[in-house]
Length: 438
Image (cartoon, rainbow, N blue to C red; front, side, top):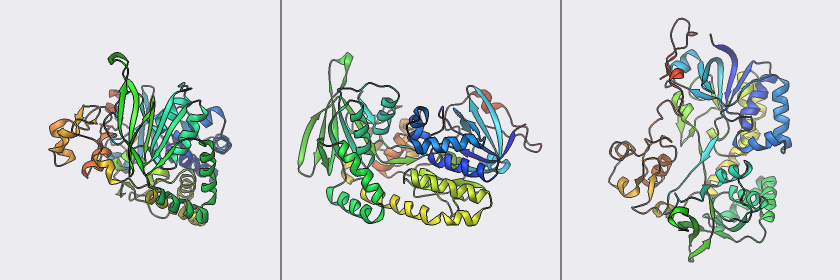
């Protein structure tokens, strides 16, 4: 028998926490499912564990006070969505075991992941995603005295550089691909629209005082150093309108925007719009009783995720007027998200960085030269196995879309590895109809 909940929230980042707490405070029975060992998501994970973020700590205390059923370290398993959405039952796996949970409403707060753009040398040891390197450092990686280049685009670069510097790294350069003119317009818009965000950015700027900051510039190549047995990063080549130059570095942290984790929503047959989950004013998707919040509906940060989580939960609880009262705040953060997209739009030069020998699919060692002869993602998979490795195209798929404009198909279950027993065992709590998971 599956345990029944009024609301199941998938994802325990700021948006998921806000949704779960708001629903519980409205008197609903809530289950919060997340694949991390503790609530907080990628942005608050260490803050929750170490108690260093007052805002995160407040939400966790509210979560605990309302006895939300929190299931950490869990993976959601779907059979393609038809059975799950029809019978409103999810299967979740943890530590080799699994359980089925029934839901009246489902709130997806699945967050986002980093986008990677291939270029010569991007597979060298020492080349990380900006958020990935920061997570490693928070988990104990010692980078004291290491020369680090932080490159890519967006406000995250300043935050990552400041945090790495606080951990003892020597920031050799911050390389931002957006031109100074766009950054100036973005800052001016913040002055009149979101002065708090401008102040936050200025604080990170002060923490990076003295660091070389290049705008309208981008890394074109990572060059190795050391012997064959100790191959690592030695320096990076940077291009700009004014020419090229090299920077010595032992680590390279790259951040080219974030990508929403839409796989679960797609498997539940929810519609996407321009790569994000399509939702109405109450955050409900195209599938009845399935809602989406946070980066899933647009990359906009903690504040947007929290207000969307509250709106979705209030809508589920039947408190429409309270939800409507939050619409102006949500719209404000959506405007901020659109300004972010416009200011840090990726430049066309980034599409030409990878040469014929550059690996695009790291799982299957497929180069750009091999993909050039293909006309679609499907053809690339058939002829080269691109996207068929362990990551199932989560890295190379968006890169191929950016490079070639290929349309990516909906994901196929299971999105992440799960046990055979989890897939084979039917759910009996479906009013007499077995619920297969395959």
